[in-house]
Amino acid sequence: MQAQVSSSASPLLAVRDVSVVFGGIVALNGISFNMQKGQILGLIGPNGAGKTTLFNCLSRLYQPSKGDILLEGESILSRPPHRIAEVGIGRTFQNVALFPNMSVLDNVRVGAHCRTNSDIVSDSLRMPWIRSGEKALNKRVDDILGYLDLRSVAHTTVSGLPFGTQKRVELARALAAEPKILLLDEPAGGLNHEEVYNLGDLIRRIRDDRGITVLLVEHHMGMVMSTADYVVALNFGRKLAEGTPTQVQNDPDVIKAYLGSKDEQ
Ligand SMILES: Nc1ncnc2c1ncn2[C@@H]1O[C@H](COP(=O)(O)OP(=O)(O)OP(=O)(O)O)[C@@H](O)[C@H]1O
Image (cartoon, rainbow, N blue to C red; front, side, top):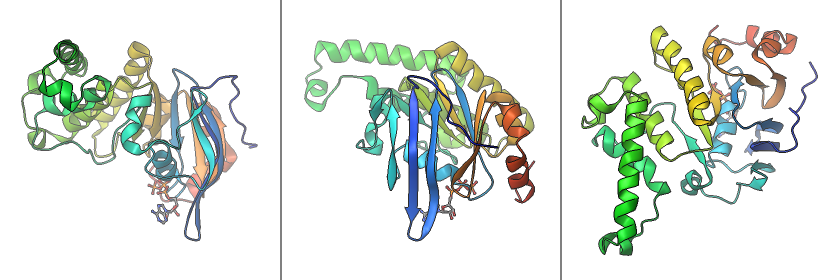
């Protein structure tokens, strides 16, 4: 199938001709696609296709060798990874990257912090805007804990929680920063069948209730196809196809790429 760029005058996120080269390996080769506001976009591809590399460019861990990534028309490529939450990009990690010895509440508070207007001087002087900011932060954190059904474990240390719950805490931490786009790196990894089903449902609710646009990198094809409303397929660093889940699932090049790989399903 002839890959095509989804058309829109003003996409929320635009990936423009992005290439990444590691030594002699071309991990991404001129990738372009748009993400519309409110979309759940699934990024798929067999092992080594370039999904993680693209995800790391979006979360600013990698710098593309060529091309640009625009959020609401502005390049994000000059932003370091720790400043990415401020412009509205949140992420979760494949293997969960929480503070294991801190409580659920404190982990989520860390996520919320990028939306406060505190600094070390105002903080230590306990200025009035710090107190009102904290009140708003506590409310927002409590709201998110309730939304993700985490209030009962708010004071539990993260390391003692089951993996599925830790993944929900990570999601809560990302949501606490009030992202415009949520980047999810293999969120179904390590979850059982029921947890995967519930996660898909939760991702759609987050989009519907909070208007958050989601980019989902996932190996679990069933989960991507039932959760995403647009899919971009990569193979060997190139875009193979894009379209609705049904279009991509029936694309002969995509079928060929998956039949020739060892990916599950
Ligand atoms: N840091 C790196 N240094 C050198 N080569 C890399 C690096 N990261 C990725 N690659 C290579 O780039 C290509 C794309 O890898 P990438 O991890 O992005 O694929 P992927 O689609 O995420 O694969 P998987 O599903 O197995 O995680 C592969 O050939 C990989 O070996």
